[in-house]
Length: 137
Image 1: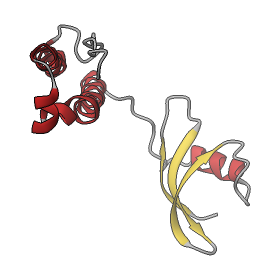
Image 2 (image 1 turned 45 degrees about the vertical axis):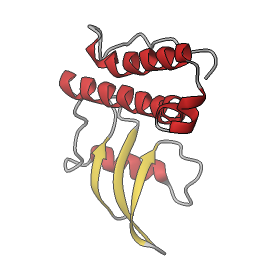
Image 3 (image 1 turned 180 degrees about the horizontal axis):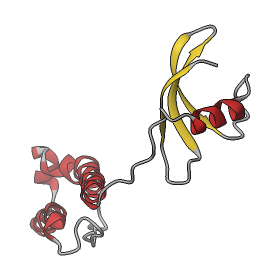
């Protein structure tokens, strides 16, 4: 089978990202994995051909900076989800905010600020200690 742009995706060389020239659809993206039971062609033979091909791009492990950037992005995304789905439905809605007691408003403001401050923790982005959500949310 004709392929192009083959690139090994993991350190164990168990998956190769590529494009294949599909007989019905033309050039399509394809992740080739040994033992793939869902292909209608011999994907093991294709995998071994790509793996042996000198033009197949070798796996390059991510740098520490890339790993930390991904971790930071994931944590910020999780924080954003918590803020949007749990906290800001109160803080961004004047009617809901007005229905809260002064103690609840203070508790929610403190919780929201603690969420925003996770990036200031010494262990960020390797790990963070998430603040405890008020039980009434």
